[in-house]
Length: 148
Figure 1 (cartoon, rainbow, N blue to C red):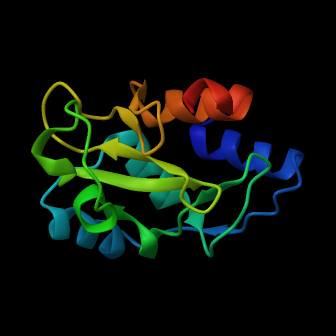
Figure 2 (cartoon, one colour; figure 1 turned 180 degrees about the horizontal axis):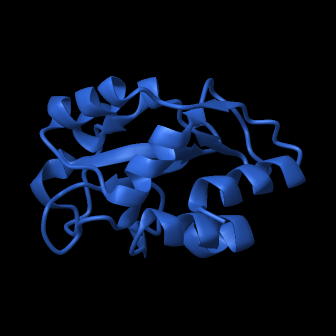
Figure 3 (tube, rainbow, N blue to C red; figure 1 turned 180 degrees about the vertical axis):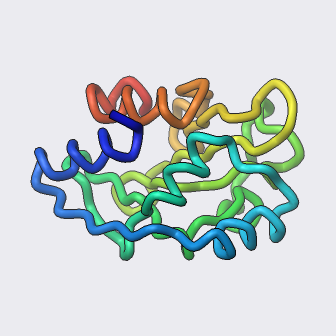
């Protein structure tokens, strides 16, 4: 089962009732152009196959962002960034926040050592929490505290 299907199955199992729809290639390409980046393949697949259609709440008070809300760190977050985030977060995309932005998770689209990693931004435990989007989803749906 692919990452998107696992996530949707978890949403259904937990009663989150999060609706998704496929994202047209042009919309995904516009995100890549706007921020001058390449999306990691598993995150690209997630968006292509379907991202949430509206703001939502999952069982852990997470809000998986609709594609039109996805922004880079620089556009969304005005606080000081941890030193492990290169280039002022210009090539990191937020895709999920917790409890009305207590903290959020962003995926690195920065070519190099951080590419594809998911970072927790905000709060007291800022760090990389997964090496890939797929790993992040696996960890989030099995024990979300492990990535918080």
